[in-house]
Length: 371
Image (cartoon, rainbow, N blue to C red; front, side, top):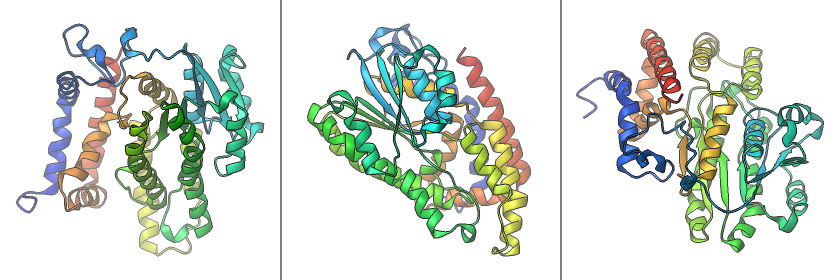
């Protein structure tokens, strides 16, 4: 099939078809009786923007009384936004954790009157089993109703520039940090036959991207771990959800790219160094400036997932990325996404820029329809 037409044309067609994506996705959710957004049926019509809608209809909420939520990586970014958003929502007691309590200042400021009322700050290092156990043991009855595993680190650049110790450190946080947390809280959830494990993954846990080799690998590991474990968890009525953002405007992201700008490329061949500096970094800035979500957007969607009666296993927070991730499943040989991204980067940069313009338009359209 794919030998008879240009893969680039297929990619262009997919993005053009996205112009009508909002409508068709809403119709799909309506027809499939999606449990995450049951309010789509309340008025007998399709909602305008199910991904960002938040209904006042109590039928969508889980009537379980107050639930304790343990959130990791709350010193900044998504973790901070999720902790504060949940603390402001009736029915939650949030334990916001971070590795270094010296960095608690920003969280205390944005927490406002929720601090020490519905939000408490505790120390937890996802890279240390003793630290995790000590934190969980300090909670009454060791009860964690919802775990939001968010702590993570980033890494971009040519593989030749990454040391093995740095790569192992990244996996220790992004993957094994999650494993340690789940090992600590899952047995209690299984015993109580209730609980929800929410994991901040990434679009790069679905589709690998240029110069994100190690970071993407860590998120692929996260996705495989959760997908395997979710089947067992279901038997004990424990829910698992992978939250998959694209670019998010946080200090975490900014620091990763600042470090990349200063990266020593002396050990890299000239052509790879040129691709990284002259193609990848400028393109990444364009993508970030065009498509980045705010931590608050991710937090709002995370709240919707946690309060859903039947949350999905996977949830992409930025639906304009869905056609890109769909490329991976459109061709079982795996050639379609590889050839498409190769051509966009190295042969048709004008089409890449045009695609970003289209995606920007879709972002604005989605934002207007949610108001």
